[in-house]
Image (cartoon, rainbow, N blue to C red; front, side, top):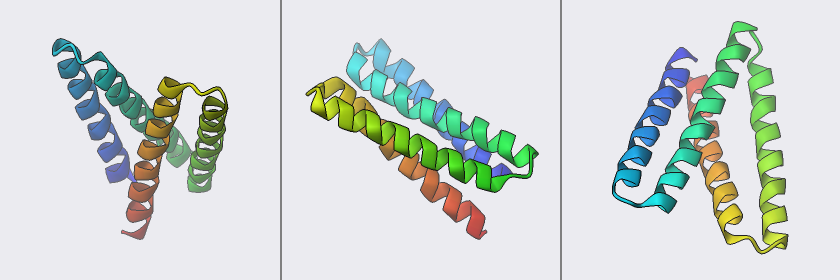
Length: 110
């Protein structure tokens, strides 16, 4: 699991660097989405690290499910409000979370 956490931290750093580059190029909207993705990786790395220290991998799985539920509900609310920016943000969070989940499953299989 340490490799998994390291991968998430590396992804977070790369996305933060990309966001800074995009801001420097005056591509603010793209920078926002890169930052959103980076935040998902950071949150997941932190939560996983805490759960591993507690010896509670199931707790991390529960947090992934919780994030998915909360962000999915936020996406549905944004769609009802017809808020395109919020829709894009929530979709971006869910896409990054799906990647984290896939990496987690791969790490468990190793």
